Length: 627
Image 1 (tube, rainbow, N blue to C red):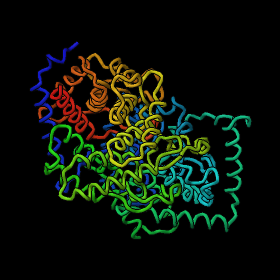
Image 2 (cartoon, one colour):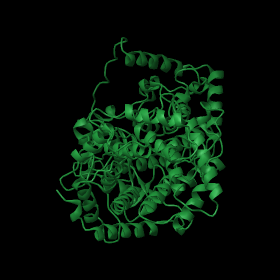
Image 3 (spheres, rainbow, N blue to C red):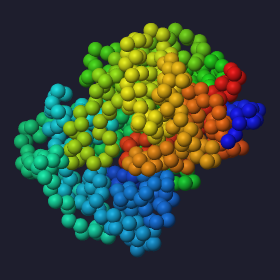
Image 4 (cartoon, rainbow, N blue to C red):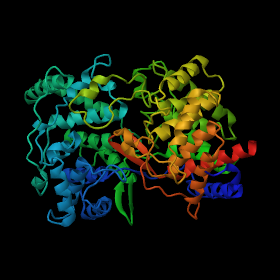
């Protein structure tokens, strides 16, 4: 065990300074930061399948994308949803189909390995619904075997169960577009078949009508019958409303929600409804996708999303933690840019909160329909660190953000990311919803970030603050940790909760804080760092366990520092960060530590490896100076 007194403090300062210099080099001249947001290869495979369907796929684009996809294949022939994870059937099926488009023969060794894995795992028959939909678009699956998703869904008013606002915003945008696609049941066959991926397994027998799943399967069979002979006037009314809904939600950058799934499905839906590829809406959509595309020596890949607002706010906090003054030019430029990103128009959140004054920030460059509470809280914390030319503008923006966040508090005292009380479980049981989270209930990490902002903000509602603190304490896990919804996993949730409770005035000797700190101490790796494998979302054996990473080590340290842990545990974590820093002041992180959908879809935020270690080193140094 390292004694903190033996940790060479000039080495800590040097590592922090070099980290700051590297982070400053990454700032755009306009004031923002943006790291690559890396996902698995389904994003790239679906991009090729979309362009094949629309007849706009080019050979150069295909080969560049295929080069990236091939590089992500593992030795066993599979593709995973995250670095080091198990092979995934649907991901492997989609990657395989994309490589066939690129001309890779089924007989090639790497393709045979993939096909063997798919067949052994149950074949195309066991792929998820979204993969089956792409196969149906490509003539390799029957629309009759895909759960029904009628466009009439959009006609249900918000008070009726299974209306579109019962779905989380990301699912809502995807579902509305897919109802149009599914109603048209298009099929444009690929120039090859994928029979080598079929296992021949029979579909599972219908479940008992005594179960909720069985009742929904019966409903699905009824809806399929209706799909064969829909009421024409009702169907036309529903599709027209869906198209208007889609058009109203295209963002200024051409995207839908700033994320890939609703984006590509909206383009498909509009195309099937007669929008030509050169129509301004379609043209803006594809130009926007081009801006989300990275092409380098590794190949061509598409970001599923971009995170400049989030990255910029985190970078501002990290640099401030590391000792940059609030009047530093980098922070002032960042604050100026961030102030311009405040959203002052109503989005879908207003369906549940129609009287609330608009404010808040989104994750992306453009996403005015979907400001989110997590970004808004972190932006507010960042802005309060800056001494800006226009202090009144910062104060006014933070006060608006405070009122908006207080108005977005859920009935139980916590916060979801995008909507209020988006907790109706019924839509999660639909046969169509076999992939990802489709609702947006309060989570510990988002609630912690909002609580941290509220605690520091003058004029906050003390009753809401107390309710939020109680929610967080009530949701502490039995082992002392907190679940992480948007970051992996209990290390992320616990670090965030400890910082929030400390900001809210929780004494460091309170039992919940001590239990959380002890959990972090107990899960430190032998090398001094922290890591948590993404399998922890589906297998409790992995909770708090995994190879050490810079971001997760920093999250643990930030939590321990907030809990005022003064022992060799923090020193060992700091030492790990120092020893794993590269000569240019950066850190490397191959593992995914960000989360889209727990259990299904994960992300590698390329800036996490930089901002969080800088923040942790800075706070560690500040604590040492204060002793």
